[in-house]
Every structure is written in C-alpha cells, then in structure tokens.
Length: 179
Image 1 (cartoon, rainbow, N blue to C red):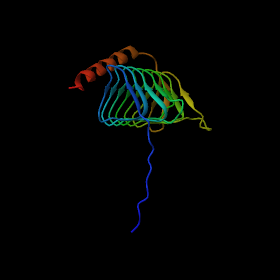
Image 2 (image 1 turned 180 degrees about the horizontal axis):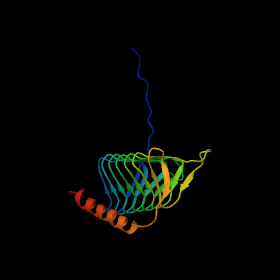
Image 3 (image 1 turned 30 degrees about the vertical axis):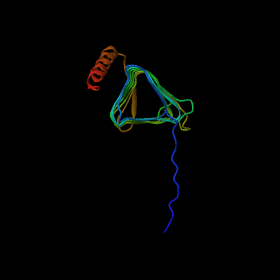
Image 4 (image 1 turned 45 degrees about the horizontal axis):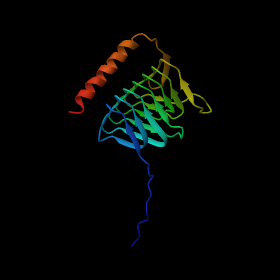
C-alpha cells in the first residue's frame, strides 16, 4: 500500500486591520497583510490576497462579490479612495489611484498602474502594450472597453454626479448589509 506524502501549502502570516465603519463580510477571503480604511464595503466571496507586500484599501471603496485582488509585489499594493470593483473583477495592478471603476469580469494584469477616474469595461483584459512588458501607467480619465481593450480618454463631465451616485450607493449598502 503506497504511503501518502506530506503536502505543503503556502502559509500566509495574516495581519488584518480594519478602520471603524468598514464592513467586511465573514465570507470574504483575506490573506496576508491587509489594511482597510473607513467606509469600505467588502462583499461575500471576495478574495484579497497579499502574496507579497501588503494591500492597503482607501476610504469608501466598494468591493463586490467574487472580486479577486492580488498583490504580487514586495512593495505592496495601494488602492486609492472611492474605487468600485464589480462582481467577478480580477485585479493584479501594481497601484490604483482614486475613483476608478472595474466593471464585471474585467482583468487588470500585474504590469499595469491605474491613475484616477479610469473605467475598465465589462469582460475587458488590460495589460501593458509595451513589447518588453514594462509597467504601463494608465492616464487619468481613460476608458478601456471591448474585446480588443480599446482605450480612449473621456472628458471630466459628469464626474461630480458619478461620485455622488457611488457615495449614495455605499451609504445604502452600509445600512442594508449589517441587517
């Protein structure tokens, strides 16, 4: 009869820090060093994985169901304030500024830095266009959409209304989820 061999799994030293007013589902999977600011809502079945470095999530971010956020860099991943990660988004970016939207089932590769007010479209894959695969900074107000990850720059029109909508949505979630 064969003898089973011992299996090893990566062990994550967990350091979790949550600001007052953050709502984190018990069904979320958090591994590594993770710092969550005030007003953040983390829905069930999200995975925030700090493989290396730490993940710092800024104020008033909304991380919906089945989102995967991974940090592969020893320098860590800093996520700015007021970002929205929709269902099934998979984000490995090196840094994320403020007020970005990651739509459902998008994928942002680890060779990308997102500035602010960017929108990554539904089912879109965003990776560096640099042939040497160096890190690419996505400029402010960039919209990425379509099967071919088409990029364009938007105007700042409507940003005040969009911000107000996002904050109102978070307020609603903060009231609803604890119940």
